[in-house]
Image (spheres, rainbow, N blue to C red):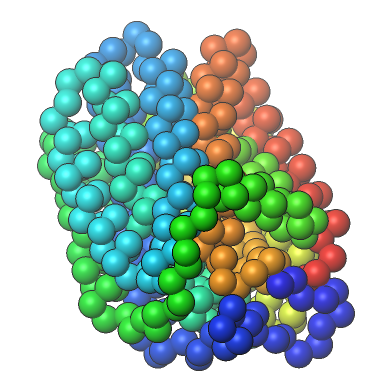
Length: 417
């Protein structure tokens, strides 16, 4: 249920049983932070370091095209499995078992990924990894609308959002340290997710919701599409998709950008450069995540923060165009982290406020996560084509244009200020 444009006192979204989300337990936010930290550690450690290195080792001459192919195909699996996992979680009335199952399955997928020796097998193994991680992610994402009252959604989303800078730093540092031992690197990141899943499912108390009866496939497909008919949700979806597309078109190729485009100081390898840039981005991202989430709660303003942070992301992406140098990349990482952290924290809170039905929260958040995973299908293909035609400068310009479009997309939202 969307909130009215002029609400003064935030109201909790009712459940199908007439109840509202219970106040979040004191330990829930740290567990959400831990669960998301592990998730982003795997995503960023694999996507930014281990996977590009593995593909480069297998076929150096075609690394850009192969990374685009593997990234695009695996993202299709992410797109398909996230709303499916959300719907299964809704149907069961549980979140914790799906978090645990997805986390444990991630270990097996990472072990497989580290042992394969062809681009085709890498693609298959990473697809399986995406499937496992999206069962984990879909259930974990739904915990906030399930268990946190509306007036605390910004703070809860900040706890969730902090997982990105901390997890990305942890994942990239671990992956960079193990860049000469890819199999071990994959396994370490998989075990980190499994440990977080065990902690969350063991310590986060869950109030079981009424299980939903299975619906025919055509009804499920209609329900997935139906949520996009809600104007506020649709604009939130579009804004998220545009910014994520621009972000991952650049970030997914960061290792190759550092190898082939940026003038690095003598003695600084691209792997070491990523290990420096990631903490720089993480610090500013952490600051803006907390500040954006808390301030958006206090001021009861979401659209303002989302729009400004998307616009700032566009400015950040212009920095490497103006200065394709190591200092330019340091400034880019700091400003981009500041923008992206605030955007993800506040935009997540905004989205939970425009969900049509609380009882379908996991399914609808899964549909929204298509705006995360869907652009990652397109981003590798677009990025490899752009780089192949004009190099990395047009790639940064494209990312900036998409971020501006994402900032403008939140303006028509009426149910949240």
